[in-house]
Length: 470
Ligand SMILES: NC(=O)c1ccc[n+]([C@@H]2O[C@H](COP(=O)([O-])OP(=O)(O)OC[C@H]3O[C@@H](n4cnc5c(N)ncnc54)[C@H](O)[C@@H]3O)[C@@H](O)[C@H]2O)c1
Image (cartoon, rainbow, N blue to C red; front, side, top):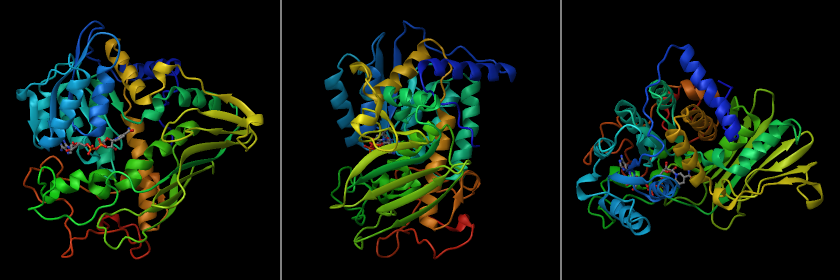
């Protein structure tokens, strides 16, 4: 468990890793079918989840150099979201957007129809909220297409184990699968990872991640206004919960899983290990009128096998100090990993524990065309597809999701939670994600006041998680 898949620290390391996966497949007697798009072929993409990130990911794909990458199908549960995404992509890339009225699909089953528009070697993009990741992944594997899916990948034990199981088939088929933990494709963080592995700052003792800002996305929600609402798309309560997915654990893992996973992932990557356990504090202030399931403050202490610590502080609060950066402390020096944001440049290393100019050892200098890690993750995926190199980020995508959920669960229950407990526990937030229709009730029902269950650390004790909802 505590041996994360070798991180893709650089192209050179990536090739080494690829070789290991290929060798492992060969040893297992598994034949890898030839499913890659030849280097000169057009690659088609289908977008499932046409929101902010989906539109960005499709653009990142079509902006790649080389033979064309064309968007041929789109799926969403809201007409207005698809229209917004389609119109902006068509304006930006008129020659690459080849979606007709016949290849736009609205509804929970739209993903199947969109994937059916692809051929082997093409890529399905999954940028809905997390709840649907395993459903979409399963069908794409059956259809033998490559995949790019956003983080987080899971929020509970059953879905984490399912994703790892499904991935065995993806590996057997030789499908290329990218997961949107874009830190791993930051050229600065890749070089920092190499420098840390080479001992530039000594042995890692402590890491710190901070994402503290006013409330963002849909982290805070007021009551569902009822079926006769005037909201865009006139959402049912299910559709409304999905459109406010950061508010609901079943949909996204809540703001903790959705917002803090990047720092947790890239800091663990620097250590080449996952934390084995977590304990945490969290609380909810001034929020009587809100119905979401999130705390507004989280402070998680993760512990690694060797006793090293990772502290992740998250806060959604107006008027409080804002910090959004990450740090690594070793026995000889320290590093700024993300200077601002999830992967913001530059990354740097320093002698000692003070990041002063006089202590500077190295600061990243990334070529202009590789500054954007969301773009780089597509460069790396498309390169693997065109040259048929093994490329599969699911294992570390799931493990990063488990570690993130472990921190959230520690805060929400007030208990110490181990990696193994988080991976192996039985409670599943949305077991019927594959059966939802436009008329389904939401998986999480409100009480008579329109409120949903919120975490109550200390009030429920023991390890009987099946009976705990948040
Ligand atoms: N890697 C990153 O930096 C990054 C940044 C932003 C978002 N994300 C991730 O991307 C995902 C989407 O986030 P977003 O900000 O784009 O949200 P969004 O609400 O803007 O977009 C989500 C879209 O998915 C659609 N959708 C929901 N359920 C669907 C279903 N079952 N089938 C088809 N469409 C469905 C929604 O209607 C919406 O259009 C989240 O998992 C989020 O964590 C990652």
